[in-house]
Image 1 (tube, rainbow over the protein chains, first blue to last red):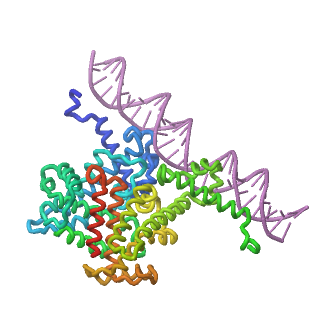
Image 2: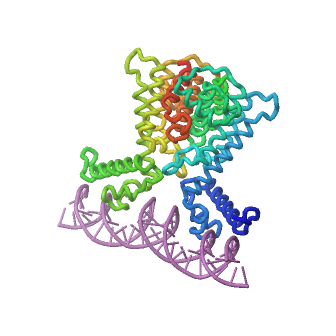
Image 3: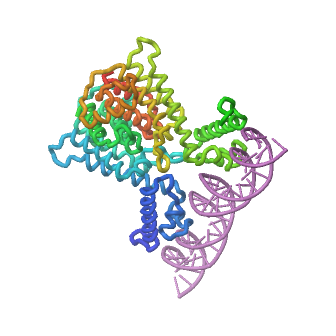
Length: 232
Length: 232
DNA sequence: TTCGCACAAGAGCACTGCTCTCGTTGCGGT
DNA sequence: ACCGCAACGAGAGCAGTGCTCTTGTGCGAA
């Protein structure tokens, strides 16, 4: 630890690179065959490695999946954050909200397996890793940020129990605008978030087949309804 | 096929019974270890059979899962239908609606693996079997039935494209009250259905951890909000 | 009674996650 | 400059999987 702090030894470089290559191959395979069929051996094969070598970098298949989950959360979160950003000063909160919702939907349609990985059924016995929860908060927090900026008139009072849970959210949100949102706004935002997840999940998982299948109109109308309901 | 039409031969009986036993064992295993870990061999082991024998009754593991999917859809659908039924003549549509929503949530919490099977990520390459879609329509159709009975004033006009898709739904719903629902009502109902799925999925899949985790209050408030939004 | 077909069992194939052992090689401390 | 350790990749191997094929057996229709 003495001289190695500044210099990066060749081994460290090689480790980082190979880790990235494994992740990249796993990402490719995830996009192709899905999480259920992702196999450590196939990843190793694609890289010309022995399967046992991969286990030096990811102790278990679930660890590899967890890394992919974090990546997916971050990718989706970045997309939503970018769409929610007030690019122009005059951009209304409603525009930011609908853009963020649409961004999540688009991301999910472009990365269905990644979406299923993070918002579908938890794979075996789920993990509540702190990395995943942090990364998973980005998108809903971006939405809450928009709501806090708009500070809409709360349309629906919340019970004391609900307000306490909302306070937990604002406490975890830090001291930004999202951290100062009213409990009614937090609850309404959470409601909108779960509704959005339901909309996107239904479409991505094929539950809307034979009904609202090309779901663009349905999704757009639903997002508008959500914005109305939030008072944006 | 001559005399066998009336009498049930011993073979047929045995086949039906063993099929039921296999399904029952599979159901038990699904509830315990989840769909991903459900194995034909373990089912056979539990029944004291060779694994190859099971394949005489379900040609493939996916066929077994499909049967479980149909069972789960029917179970959930029956629970929702029962809750949505106008048990007393004076029961308001709003009561029926909230009861149906709560019934779905309760069913999902009692059968998380079954819920994940039908509303989580589709397992490998999905199947759009006609049996599953029919069974899967029961719960949302029960909700639509309640809405059609209430015939609320449509709060939100729908575009022509959306109305056409709604017509597809009413056409498939047959000639009951649900089949005569206005397009605006059908779309609003579909919106409520996806929102309900998002709420229940978020809770069952653990997405609400650290925020609205004992989710009874949040769920109840969300269902009330949905009922309000529907004009019930 | 006889023939045929459905049946259960078992071996076997290709695959999986994961572990263990082996020879090698890079790297830090003396 | 050297030595020893730890990290490394390869390969074999274990237990498990879905699924197939063959083999023998007993029920049931003709």
